[in-house]
Amino acid sequence: MRMNDLFKELDDMDIDMIAQEFPVLTPDEKERIYAMSERKYDKETNNENDFSDKDEIVVSGVEHYKRPVWYKYASAAAAVILVIGGISGSMLLMKHRKTIQPDNTDLFTSTTGEKTTFQTGTNEQNGTSTEQATKESVFIPATTAEVTEATTAETTSEAQTDHEEEYEAVALDLTDKFAALVNKLNRNVRYDPGNMLDFYITTSDRYLYNQSESYYYRVTEPGFESPSNYTDAFKEICTEELFEHLYSKAGSENDTDLSEQEIDIKLSEAFKADLSRYYTGDHVELFMDYGITSANFITYRGGLYVCTDMLPGDWKTYSDQPSITEKSENSFVSVRNALFSPVCKDAASQTGVPLTFSFVKEGDNWKISSIVQDQNR
Image 1 (cartoon, rainbow, N blue to C red):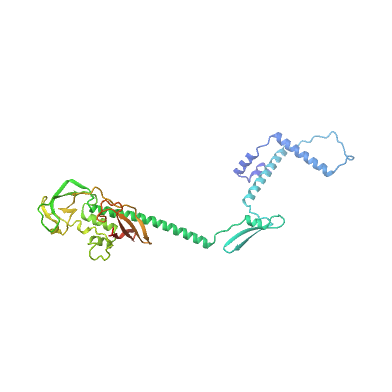
Image 2: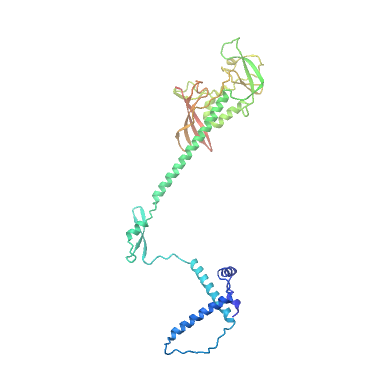
């Protein structure tokens, strides 16, 4: 047998591992191992022969035996084979090992009601009682009903929280936009101070010669430079029904409930005065010609102008945050106290007038479906 045949089944990884764990023996170490093995062999041979003192034979002049040269290499190869076999067997055992239950242990399951208990029983030989093992090894999983109930409750709670946050965000956004639009109707817009018109405006059915001048400046508010921009903005946040109601004469004699009614912002009258046929400095009979008593805005030869007489110092909105009072899947109700005109007529009020906003979801968008104010406040 050739020396290389001993290693033909080894790959590089096994050779590296063996080289690291078992370095090459020196000649002295090989001699020492051989001498030790020889002494052990002689001892075992002497024990088997069981010689007595009487039968002991003393031999002198023994000729020394010289081992063949190939014997050393064969011994080293045999040692390597033993090492490889031990390592390979250990790795194979670890790879295919299985959990072995003791022969004296029985696993069984007892079910009582809705709770399942896993117990470990023992026999009398190991001295461990079944009661003690049961107390130490108890697993009580939740039943299907309990898990379903807990999951449903958690999901419902999360859904309600999500809806609550969504409703609050929608109410805040749409009510803020509504207040901003109403304030724009109350002349909270930018204008060009270099582009001015002035007229003598009569606001009643009687002709007055001593009317003071009213000054109008060209509106430059981005996105609100024409009457259609305002109406489109209201349509964006209001349902079609509410917009039609706001545009018509809300608060008319057809309202039966005098304590609560939808607000009247006079949207249809806001841009009714077209003074294109007049010249600056002319006398204008606003009520006689247009049936209105005031004109915050006028249209004049293609432009929109805003009246700057007695502008308020600031434009208020609300005194609080919206609070959700009713809610369902696609609708909810919110209340908020308004400080802006014409809802709140007291400029010094700190609390304002409660407005009840109703919201509905149209497709993917939320819109205001009604706005009711308390007329007793």
